[in-house]
Length: 321
Length: 265
Ligand SMILES: Cc1cc2nc3c(=O)[nH]c(=O)nc-3n(C[C@H](O)[C@H](O)[C@H](O)COP(=O)(O)OP(=O)(O)OC[C@H]3O[C@@H](n4cnc5c(N)ncnc54)[C@H](O)[C@@H]3O)c2cc1C
Ligand SMILES: Cc1cc2nc3c(=O)[nH]c(=O)nc-3n(C[C@H](O)[C@H](O)[C@H](O)COP(=O)(O)OP(=O)(O)OC[C@H]3O[C@@H](n4cnc5c(N)ncnc54)[C@H](O)[C@@H]3O)c2cc1C
Image (cartoon, rainbow over all chains, first blue to last red; front, top):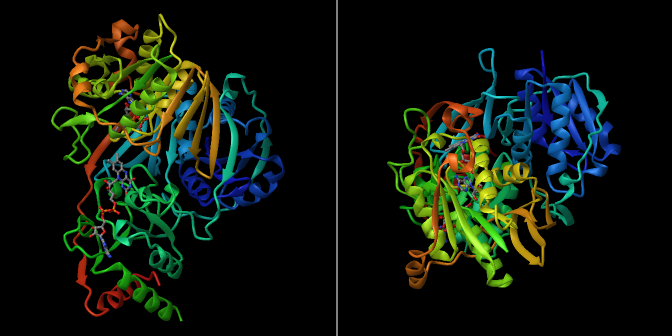
């Protein structure tokens, strides 16, 4: 069976959940090999984690000479690794950076790229078949790569991580980074402040607020905390300066696909729907019964979020005991 | 300064977007427009021109079918100086790699006399929305990639942007020539003024085919694509859910009840 490369999603060696999802998908397609590009001193910690989800090999690429630059050196490193390992496919987390790496890799390797897959399955004897959700979630597209090594970026929540012990054989890989890859410099970086809540794109439950909050996100946050959820926002709420852009759900924000999405005071514009339409269960609270968001919901409450949410939160906390 | 801003013509997101029987996007039957997210690229290009001075040229470049000319026109109306529309039947059905090839060749041709200093793109198209073409262009053109900017600053040939990265807010710096892409956070795009609309009619507009770019027909299009769409299906409409009116707190109880029934509590 051939190797399937999985690019490890992590922050300074702290492995993120999409990594395990990708490893689970890789196992369907071949032998998972994790590719860790990061600080070398965290490699053994990362190895311990990824081998629990089936990584047979762990390629360790020390990022000391890569990290001060945007995207290009990582793409170069991966291209060299692909030449060496000849994998059956390469799976990359579908983050902004992941997609850009995929784009550059595609040109370098003269290989097809598929972005934002929500499912990947083995094809009949050939390239894996991907599922994408397109046009604001109104269409489902199945596609495959027909040239080169399939490069697929996969969205968070695309598979339930399955534990399965892999060998986790560590192989250090030292790429040669060209000078042209070092031309876009990261001059400064300010890590995002931890919110203490789950990450928006990875969360099982997302509670969002829109213009209808009138700028008061307290009821949204309280409900989110009662449910162990991440907090999201519509663009109207972000543009009003109530929430940072990193909380925005939609076409120009994050796409989420949680088990439960609760939209409060959000009308349901197509650009917002584009970011949440594939959520498993959708709930809305809106005082306008004509709001388009109600077309999507499994359950909706026509009412004022400022009274409904605090009461519901209290009720939930009571039930939790 | 010589700036090329890449603008895509897309089917209107608020219209009923469809696929053709060959699984390509219906780009004729549905009304189209300049991808709204590319207005931000035009805006930033114009702001850079305003700061850099009059010897700056902004060329709007679009690869697309006949109607895609509308996207170029809109950019000219906003204030771009020149338009280039690359149109060729062979391009239909191209994937991202092929699209970036055509764009890269066109950028090289635009820069044949005066080298291009800045290639500007948007955050993503509003149809496919892959968010990869600018990175592909940087790779093909061998230029620094300074992408997904929410703030753009430049001084001389130095460009600095703020990028809301996946895990950090970053400041990225590069030296022109480079590829820049901007997000919808970079600042409202201007509306074409009446004067702008009139002036646009007289602005130079070139139409190029693949042979003008030295690209072979078999390098692009559906047949040459490195990816293949095997099936498209409309997502089944969501089944209508239960909607209750909140009266004297009944909404909150019903909501909690629903969440409990689905085991979210
Ligand atoms: C290119 C482009 C990209 C975009 N990208 C995004 C994106 O990524 N994400 C996004 O969200 N939008 C995006 N938009 C904007 C989108 O079109 C909408 O304008 C936006 O989603 C509206 O946000 P909203 O629903 O919060 O506000 P509104 O549409 O104003 O809706 C507010 C809702 O709150 C309800 N309400 C008011 N008060 C209360 C109350 N007390 N209790 C309960 N309900 C109340 C109202 O009935 C109304 O339905 C984009 C637009 C464009 C053109
Ligand atoms: C639903 C759907 C799914 C698709 N999936 C894939 C896939 O998985 N893999 C694949 O290779 N192709 C795919 N395609 C084809 C791909 O969308 C097109 O080839 C497209 O030209 C490039 O990708 P994009 O529109 O996503 O551009 P993006 O990368 O999102 O565009 C970013 C920027 O690039 C510039 N730009 C992009 N296209 C043009 C253009 N034609 N003219 C001028 N400037 C432009 C603009 O500045 C734009 O803001 C898909 C198409 C559709 C409709």
